[in-house]
Image 1 (cartoon, rainbow, N blue to C red):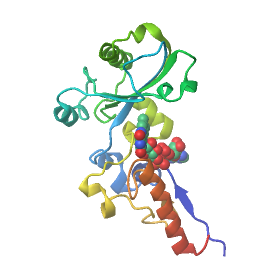
Image 2: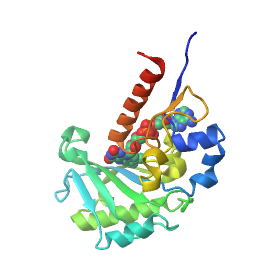
Image 3: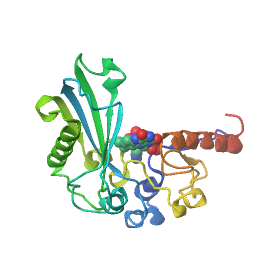
Length: 225
Ligand SMILES: Cc1cc2nc3c(=O)[nH]c(=O)nc-3n(C[C@H](O)[C@H](O)[C@H](O)COP(=O)(O)OP(=O)(O)OC[C@H]3O[C@@H](n4cnc5c(N)ncnc54)[C@H](O)[C@@H]3O)c2cc1C
């Protein structure tokens, strides 16, 4: 008899709740779990070369602990945000027209449980761009050739990220190992899960390992594939 199996790459927690209607994973329960940061990202094409930027740059204030403890559960936009800037054109000039920079800015922000309205996205982006301009001593605003912003609502829509959480379920003690949503479904013996919110965890290396673990399970369950 032919054996069929299914592998879901959707978020392993919210898929169980929203698609399979499992009580344990309905939104009210998921909302009480710990989720990783929501991303607020800005993509800029800028005229001119900016001397005080490297390929990888972090811009933090003097109170990282206090900032990190409060900002992710706050309903207001960060006024003095902490953010990461990647300038790929520093290492790969072909990423931008000659004499220009290709800039990606990632700012961790509250997810949609805490801040559902992002009508202030332009204001937040401008805050970040102004702050960056000041720190590096270059008029970025006046030299923008292209600009694209993605707020948590758009990140949620693009990849079905639960409430805009960028990396899925967090790695708190009660959300790792046996406590994390399993990679084999509790009810359907031929349904498996890969990705950030199942085992072993979130981030690209872990996600790749999650697919290896499922392959191993399939080999155990079905013999050589
Ligand atoms: C801005 C940002 C920066 C990041 N930076 C890093 C980094 O520097 N290093 C790092 O290790 N990780 C980083 N991550 C995290 C990393 O990208 C994720 O952990 C990883 O991509 C998760 O892989 P995944 O396969 O679980 O989900 P995804 O890569 O999101 O793939 C899931 C796929 O399933 C689709 N899908 C979802 N639901 C359904 C459904 N119901 N039906 C059909 N299809 C569905 C989605 O559209 C998507 O294509 C970052 C994430 C973000 C958002």
